[in-house]
Length: 400
Image 1 (spheres, one colour):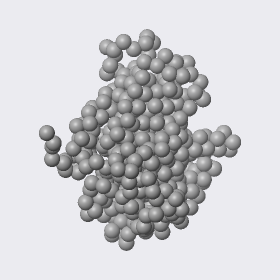
Image 2 (cartoon, rainbow, N blue to C red; image 1 turned 30 degrees about the vertical axis):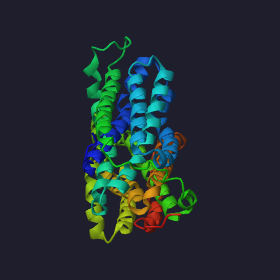
Image 3 (spheres, rainbow, N blue to C red; image 1 turned 120 degrees about the horizontal axis):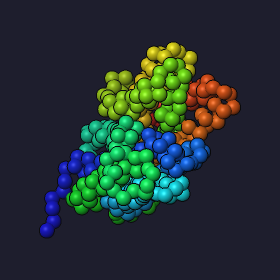
Image 4 (tube, one colour; image 1 turned 90 degrees about the horizontal axis):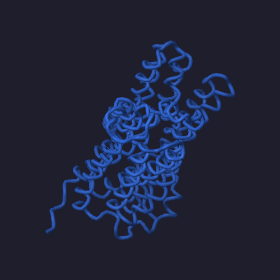
């Protein structure tokens, strides 16, 4: 017996839950890295690899997933992505050493990269145009909230599954990986119940054409490079701002708490972004102003006192996530429906390489210069350069 189609909010909510749990599983290592390093006697280089390795895999999978979702449909792609995240995330809980963790991390990154391009595809195909700004805010907030929950809750989740037969000697970190796997399982179950009653999105080969036009689009390249800069700043902030704040007199726990404001303020920023953009005169002006504010907010982090630096971190959290929303919403709102998945995959794929490049380059500059000043200057300069991409936002282009 056939069921009537679901309201778009139920299907999008299920997809957002999968994205939140996938991103949380991926970022959870940030709060567990030191416990893992001690427990498995890893080097700092090995622990750093586990932190940074998901991002190039997200990028690679997003490039592939963007094309596949336009061919195979969002139902299959989100389900496949969730299965990979579940296998990798759950497998990490029983990993016996570095290579087991690395393999699980690779699966989590690959699965996450397959899920993301489906989100703009769902919005483009299912959501009425008048509701697309709200829908894009919902899926952007799910990504950011996943990171915030991973940073804030992973250590507290760690002791919850001590009754399971984990390898001996674990310091509790395995329970956190298991907890995030349960979250993926629950979200995946919601998605499976919803996907069968969504319209068949992207299952008729609608994405087979238009590729050359997509890659010739200056707007697509500008938004992708803007997201690259955005991720350089966001993930470098999460990785290195705690050390900068600790150097200004904050305790490590206080510094971590201040930096956790970046994703939590980001959730508020993405819901305020579209109304604020309307008041500012459009998305182009909003992106330019938020890029400039990001650059200005970085200055007190490096050269201000403890409280000014904390205020700068909060401003970065607001501005960088405000700008992030417009990058993530672009494929659904300003590309033809048949290209939404591919455009999302390309923009997310290129953009998320910044999550790998930024923290690594900032650490290298710190080793070279002995301080974070050059890295902060580079971040501010990139934010200023990203303002040059603002004229390409909000520009609808015909498909090819």
